[in-house]
Image (tube, rainbow, N blue to C red; front, side, top):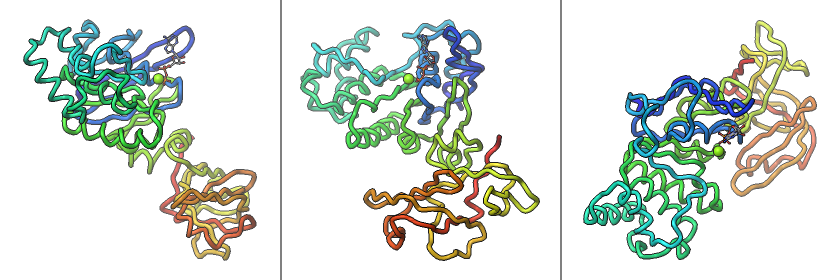
Length: 342
Ligand SMILES: Nc1ncnc2c1ncn2[C@@H]1O[C@H](COP(=O)(O)OP(=O)(O)O)[C@@H](O)[C@H]1O
Ligand SMILES: [Mg+2]
């Protein structure tokens, strides 16, 4: 069952279509990652679900009930935004208790629930501190505690980790996922970091210019992106275009991508092989190795092919025998050819 659904949601600002007939279901108890370039409508979608934005067309349903007449505070939604303003003069416990006070929860129960949720976000001993006495990650966890202490039905997270540095962000991703699992709350998580979305989400949706271009489990979308935009937005993709023939796709240099059925195909960098001698693989072409980039365990090779830049990724030692630059063979398995429409 879907806890949240949006149907034909449309919102225009001046001439900008922030949301263009978006229809999408967010499964009950799931972690949904919403992705898209800057300005694609992610924040507007969250704000429409929360009730801060009134759509011109379409509707939002929470637990199967339309909510157009339900005000923000009655939608039972918890929110964490990138700039999660904590009250600076209140302690951690007071910050977390605030939403319960507003809802007139009695003091004894308030104290019990604050203690419980601080325990959940591993801030048990920090209740008496002020926000400025906490690290960035701890403040972020206070914001999470504050959002879930009222036991909302839905948690909306708008790039909550983007202000944190890389190491802390990865740590908080693990924490966030743990907390979401323990509470079992339906979560919609906005990020522009595709790796973050892939790591955390049960399902992802990709927005482009206010339109939903793709939705599904991360693996399925990654393996079958369907169009060039999604292929490039989610991970990296080498694109090959040519002319279709009965046997496959004939590329500009005469190479046949056997079995291909679309005029453009993609190959993921991790599926490209590079060799100095002609490989036995049926799909192979000549390219020029331009650069080898060492990045710890993994390496990247940048290649030129027919005026295009291609990338191959592998364990650095797989590339150890290659020269710094020069002519090489590129090959891949037919099963790794991704068909693209349009
Ligand atoms: N309050 C607003 N007033 C005018 N334009 C807005 C407003 N909010 C968003 N927009 C526009 O709507 C589009 C989508 O914005 P937004 O939802 O913030 O995108 P994202 O969160 O994906 O970066 C953008 O073109 C943005 O400029
Ligand atoms: Mg945004």
